[in-house]
Image 1 (cartoon, rainbow, N blue to C red):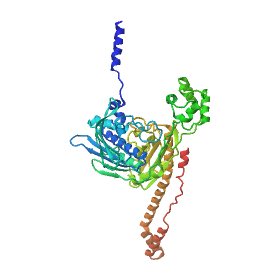
Image 2 (tube, one colour):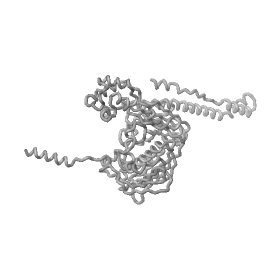
Image 3 (tube, helix red, strand yellow):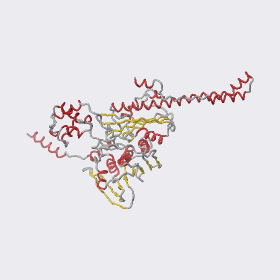
Length: 537
């Protein structure tokens, strides 16, 4: 009896210690999940979240983005910086300022299926959380919707409630602008390297060539000028596709639908399901159409789910995607890398798990690219640079499976990237990018994604090989001409001794013959012999 009483007492004591935690409190203790696992990376992550927010806001309002970024050290405090990001977007209405910046999982895109940079509502509020955690200072925000009033707010996050805590707020009139400016004091370390803030902004300018970004760094002021003045097409929200819905989500949709019949449920709550397809699903599940969706539960949901998998449906609509397209990719690469040759490919859309996606690639060659180094790989998802964990990313894996020697490039045995003056741009757009973590640094290795990236790279590689081979042949011809020019005096002298003719006239005629007979390499528009055949094999 004593043992039983002790166990009951222990259970009661344990229950008193149990309590619900908020999402803010969770990430306060697990900040590494959001990309704040070291000081160098943390600085980049704060800038990235703020800039991504600004770009998304501008594009949603169809405004050509002008963004100012400042990173300045705090005097007398080691590894402490003030980060400021300002945009010319639509601004934020007063009542939403606190929730946008001071409440994790607050946003407008989580329940929408359309291409966007942020969907979880964690990014910028996560940066505010990191700021207050490492500096103890509030975020300072200024915003205006263009009505002549600027709303200023200092806020922190109440992590126990996951709610904004307003420290100070005021409204000033007279300033004619629209947009948002956020200032955060954070712990970080500024280092110029391949994953630095300046490199991130350079890559952002590559994938967003319509944006102008001014960066005031601790060392120098840099301006990334826009190369085009046209925004990509605006993506539209779509409804979920049945083949992309898992059984648990199907159960929840059945319980919350406003449709009164199963046919109405499938035709109104999903995309690409017509009357005949809905009736076929219901028939295979052995239900009557008069059954209310809300009455379906337990094993019946499983039957309905299995019936959905058996019916062939039209792929989901594609206007939810907004790829850059070849022209914008080419202009971005030309502006930021200054190569001598650029080729870009945008593949036709495909689907994984019922989610539409599209892959596009670009190859930049020669010019100011370093001639003797390993190629630079730029990875992007929904126009956001992926700066870390390339080894685990589907985009990098696809690049490593390409045999670049087929396209006239040098590649060491066993190497994943070619060597030479080459930069590789790979971009995936989707309504749901399968990141492997909340920090959004690498993409899961879905076979459909890897296949599409490889096909796009092979297509671009064939076009690059034409240019590379033509350049190589031109170089060989120039070498032969140079060699012949070198020996013209000796040849003219020998002919003169044999024929008795004036050697100066002979030399002049040889030079004229050389000018007329320079090799012209015909551009046939075909890939190097055997390349396409080997890929098909």
